Image (tube, rainbow, N blue to C red; front, top):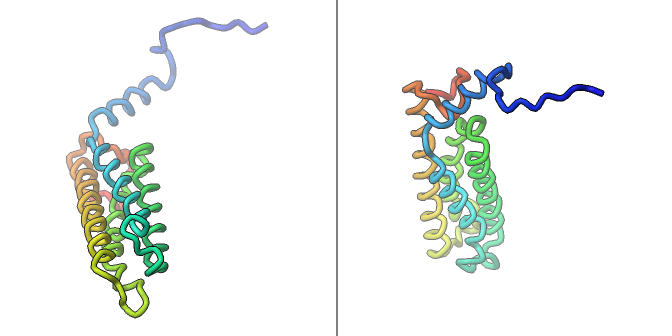
Length: 161
């Protein structure tokens, strides 16, 4: 039978230095969890807005667009919150999605039949998402510039600046 060790001290473990460095990088990295949550909430609102504002039967194209964009933003927000080291370089994608959400009532509706509630709903949700995306991207860029332990990892790359 194999002998098992019941040591409580992991200081001799070969990965201790890497685990400590990763812990320090996360602890000292930018704190954007609130922004991640706001991206998820605003994306969820965008997804359900056709039923909240009651334009799902008037413009099914805009309802489908809002549902898809909102679910994509919710997934992005979950990714940003749950896997920050891998996902924070993708935080910039929130801004173009938000801009499209703002212009979608004119682009997607047939015959440009967007009503004021549709326009206001998308403009407010898109504006909030654009703001949160810019905040998230700014935090990532500032931490990459300062070199103080970015949550996006220490990989070089074109998206850092």
